Amino acid sequence: MNKDILNEDTIAAIATPPGHGGIAIIRISGKNSLSILKNIFMRSNNKSIDEIKPYRFYRGFVINNKDKQAVDDVLVVYMKSPNSYTGQDIVEIHSHGGNVVPKVVLDLCLINGARAANPGEYTLRAFLNGKMDLSQAEAVVDVINSQTEKALKQSQLQLEGQLSKKINTYKDILLDMLAEIEANVDFPEEGIDPIVKDRILGESESLIINLKELISTFNDGHILKHGMTTAIIGRPNVGKSSLLNCLLRKERALVSEIPGTTRDFIEETIDINGIPLKLTDTAGIRATEKSIEKMGIDISIKKSQEAEFLIIVLDSSQNLNKDDYEVIKLIRNSNHIIIFNKNDLSMKISADDLPSNINKDNVLDISAKNNTNIEELRTKIFNIISGDHKANESTSVIISELRHKNSLEQALQSFERFKKALNINESPEYLAVDLRYGLDKFGEITGEITTEDILSTIFSKFCIGK
Image (cartoon, rainbow, N blue to C red; front, side, top):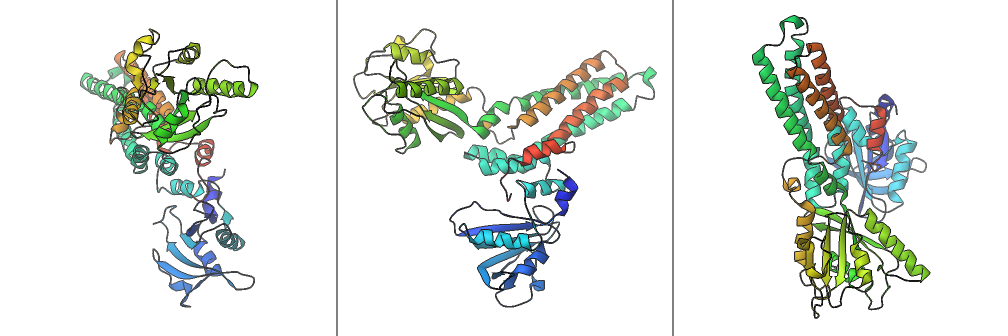
């Protein structure tokens, strides 16, 4: 990927999702944007296109170059560089939606000198032209893909530059420390003034604490961004599909009194107090010789092993049997809840009937049929998942990118090495190496230090047109 060439071409793409819709937006960015518009657009009042002013909408017609016939009645807007999303001249053509019209308009843009945009190329240009740093650019796709309001809020905080501001604050502290250290490089025999040394040690300790706190938010951020994979498991006919429908508040899964109705799995996402739960309703687990049902059971067991959270459903109107105990054995960690379903009937089991290693606090009785205790279930799931981690309820930014976490951890290690070396009076040249390494790791997050491979990986996640 040649960044200079990418930034020079004039690009075009459809910026709205394909399919039926009232409006489609075709976006052109680059130095030839306005000249391309002049070739394919005629104002409805026949006035000259040269009179178009930036940041105003103009009505007119997209014209086919070959037969000079109108393709569509459109609105256009011109955004002049550098005051645009990409920092370049941008033209947007707002056409009618559908599958045909937007493609015809885009084809005309390409015929008249534009190049088809790559995924994320508009945001890449915004980064290259200094309209946003790399962490903000990453947040663009997170805003688009947010599954809950809390996830959206966190993405917006990063897009607004809150993570960048935090990193830049750390960099300023680090630069002051580095200046003090390097001031002693030419006079190593004199050593660092004790007062200065104590101050630098205090600043490095504060920096280490702040980095550890930021790194600790990754698990919350990862869950908010990607959701938590959750498997609903149990033997046949205990009410797994009914529970799924209750949580979704719609009839998504087929409910039948005939055991073994669910042969494959169903996946849906729900919002639990801002945490996306990626629910999988699985086939009932039991001993069987039926080959098709056994295939579904194998999938259920595999899904339970892959899941980050388990919802185990038991029929409280019946005594526990060997199939129930086989299901309970699938519990591997604290991230689970056990449901006693059908509490509208006479209950024949209690938490005391569960194995001794089961946390009885993670048990709740409900009736999926009557929608009893479903909200309590939502609350209990949230409390189990969140535990003592409340960062996802905060208005301060948290990290969700593994790339950020890795860079912060490497920076943290360099500062811990620096603090140890300073305590034993290592030479200023040696001390400066670790501080500069930490600066580089901060620069990787904001994009001051990056590679084309990193940029390609990040922007390949974007849709075309953004």
